[in-house]
Image (cartoon, rainbow, N blue to C red; front, side):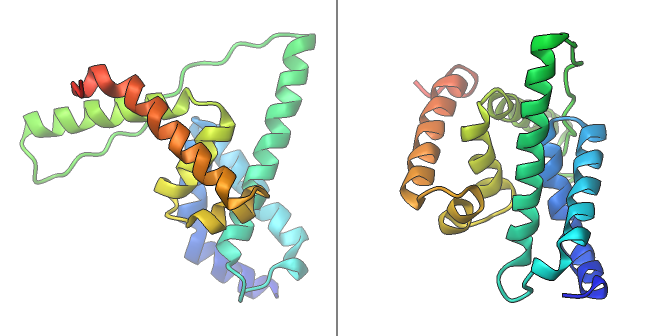
Length: 174
């Protein structure tokens, strides 16, 4: 692959990669840093990217590995010298055709779901974001995370149960 082809990939998948980075990091600044690092790494590995074998998945896997490395380093540094983080604000979106009441309800529901997902450990949160946020198949997620498809399927089942219990009170699903 050439640098020109990589630029085409950035144009084609840039928004999806940024959205994934934003969900992963829960912070716009960190998402921008991760996004940039992802494409810097892609430039370094441009010869490894095969346009015929789902380059979006390759870029997402770069982002995942960079994020895991950053979290591991952060955890190690926290053991040495603790640092506090500010809570994250999620962007709000509601249908412009909806009434103000409906928009408010949609925002509240979305916020509750996003907060519940963000509380999940990475082993559950990443597959959920890849499945629902990036619309990847189970097989693609398994390949990205270097896990058997059955493990991904099991984790998604577990996370659905966890979220159902967590959000039961909010959505009155008794």
